[in-house]
Image 1 (cartoon, rainbow, N blue to C red):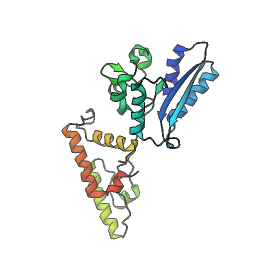
Image 2: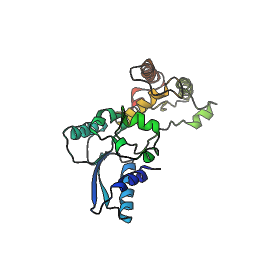
Image 3: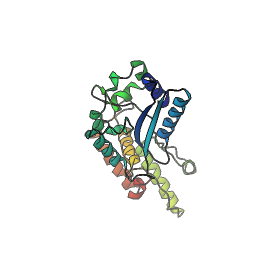
Image 4: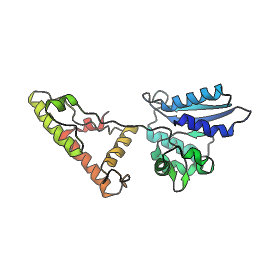
Length: 249
C-alpha cells in the first residue's frame, strides 16, 4: 500500500465539518517529484470524497532555494527547536531522525496498530524511531542501480562483477585493453559520491555492501567494517577511477 492510501486512512480519523488545512514541507529535486505527486493525489481524493482535508505543500527545490540536504535539515531543526508551528507535516531524509526526532510526536500513541502493520517493522524500528518512540513513517523508497557496460564485458568475455575486487580486476583489464586501441575516455567506476543527498546515500550504500553477511545489520560507523569500507573506496579510486570520476554524477 502506498503512502497516499496510508495517509488517507490516518487523516480520515480526524475528519470534521470544517475544512482542515495541513501545511507540509519537503525537499525534492526536479527528477523526483514523488512527494508532490502523493500530496496531489491525496488532495484530489479528499475533494472527490468530501473529506474536508487539504494538504498545502511547500516543496523546496533548486528552482526556489539554494539549500542542500544539510541546510534543509538544519532549517527544519531550527523551526522545531524554536517551536514554530508553521508546518504540520515534515518530510525529511531518515538520516535526520536522531536529530529531529526529539521534537516530534510519538506516533505509537496516535496511529492504530493495524495501520502501522502495513509498514515494514524493521524500517519503522531502525529508520523511523528513537528508542521506543515512533517519530515518522516512510514516505517512499529510493533505490540506486549499479549499471554495467555489457558491450565491453561481452567483447572481452567478462561477466558482471559481483564483488568490489572483481570490479577492480575486470575494470583494470578492460581499461588496459581499450587503451591499446587508443580509447582512453572510459570511466571504470562512478561512485556517485557527490556533495548532494545522492552522495550521502551512496556512501551509506557502499558501507552497507561491506557488511559481514547478507543478513548482517548496517555496520556501526565506528566499527572496523565501516573503516575498512572507506579504505576500500580509496583503493578503488586509486586503482581504476580518478577523483573526478568517482565523485561526479
